[in-house]
Image 1 (cartoon, rainbow, N blue to C red):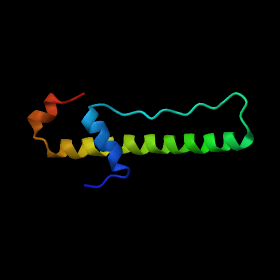
Image 2: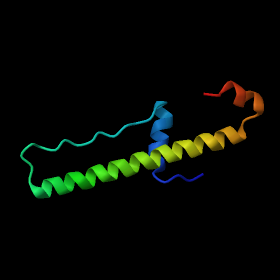
Image 3: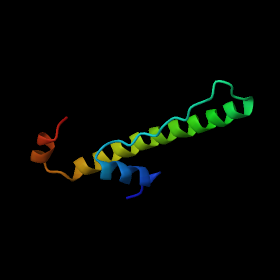
Image 4: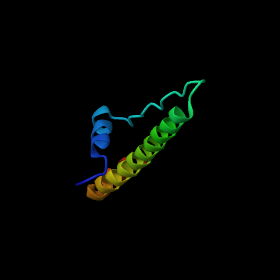
Length: 77
């Protein structure tokens, strides 16, 4: 089984919860270059969050497909 950014999925499974990345702070007196770097970092963090969410949904679907009907009924959220 392969997931894009699979290490994030493993971290979440080991922790038993979704691991959140911290968004870096942008200083009040930032330069245009610092703003550009910050924008790039935030964009990458958002992409990673979206990929992680999709990976966890796919993993859940795979696990549910392997369960029998009694287990599926017990695990309904």
